[in-house]
Amino acid sequence: MIEGQTSVSGGPDPSDTDTTLVVVTGVSGGGRSTVARALENVGYYVVDNLPQALMLDMAELAMKAGGAARRTAMVLDVRSRAFSTDLAGAIRELKERGFAPRVVFVDADDEVLIRRFESVRRSHPLQGEGRLADGIAVERGLLEGARDQADVFVDTSHLNVNQLRRRIEELFGAEDARRLRVTVVSFGFKYGVPPDADFVCDARFLPNPYWVPELREHTGQVEAVSSYVLGQAGAEDFVATYADLLNATTAGFEREGKRYLTAAVGCTGGKHRSVAIAEELAARLRKTGLAANAQHRDLGRE
Image (cartoon, rainbow, N blue to C red; front, side):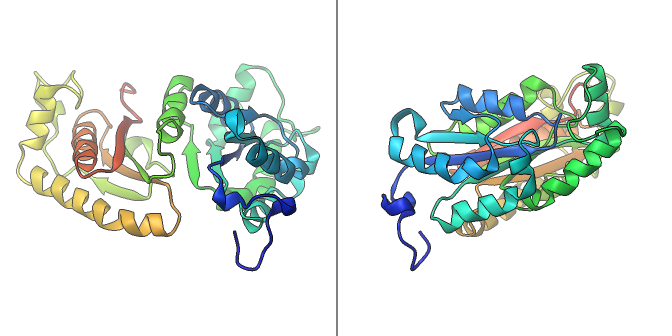
């Protein structure tokens, strides 16, 4: 509750309840529907295609209802022209009225979005008489303010449906969803740096198992590869130092209200070194009491 404000609609103070609100938005074709289903899987009451003008009313209803609505997710998109005007302003209003919504923004590269629309032979809801690319550009402009307010930014360009579902379930399925959660993502530099990374580190200084014939076809999740990578000179110091760095920042991020932290570990192709390092780093963070998991964006792409 902001100092000097009264309770919402004369009712209870939102900050005194255990209601959890999630706002899901993002570009069309980015994966909002998958996110919504994943949230349902972990116990959220999901309201899809909610007009922006009804967000505050829905938040109040969820707060008063409790029970099954204690964890409520509101999914908004451009199908509602009322939403299209000022979603960022609606989110700010929720915060000003004492709510603390967590905003999930799903995105993908333009080329990927175009392929997805073409594969299902659908037009973009905002393209009108123009091209798919025109509709995507218009939508990005409308969503710019909401994107800036995102607590969780998910780039689905390289995620399939199951990978996206698992990520959302890991982020929101924990009993204590208010704790800072750390995702350690392995990736290949040749496929690009994950745009949602808060930290990026480079494991290419380590010898590449690709050049060891008996290890080449295996991944960093296999013990022989992991032992080879972690046994190299400098690997132990690298992992320990990076774990210390993350642990040194988590308390500050929590004070600033951040709930999701992404640390990306890269190697050439995202198959050997980065995978082994990501698994080890996530395990060490868990030992210090952090909620951490490892994900491998580019595993299987080669």
